[in-house]
Length: 177
Image 1 (cartoon, helix red, strand yellow):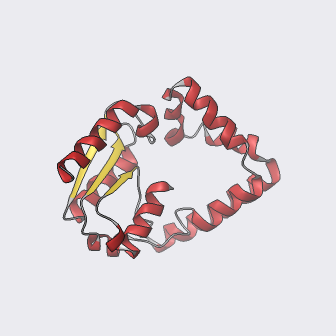
Image 2 (spheres, one colour):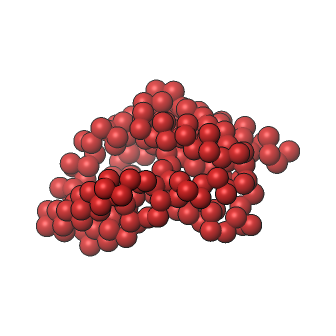
């Protein structure tokens, strides 16, 4: 959700951004039918979270293919991350999903080309869905670079922090020498 928030803000307030780094970002759902299906799915999931609770949701969510690669995050970080996630409330998670889930956010694809600052788009090599999105975003944005982090999934900054950090440092050093 961080990439989505950054992209929304950068497009709405471009003067505030000198550069953008997006990790596993998605500008939105373009297809109206797919968007409606996702809204219904998200509302169903929100109801399930409210009914079954946070631990049950997390157990199931962490087994989804996109999230499963988080098993590769350092054990101490993963332990802290899970502890933080378990502190969330069912109502808060449900509300977040309903109000800031991908289907609830505007489709930014039509306005994406308006982002004129240098942009680094990062995806994990094993996250094929978001790698395809990253490639398409790179083709849409005039000043975009795409970096695929080898052997990781949806959270390259936590699954391979050194490699991801190096890519970001190199990008920023080219801009702000």
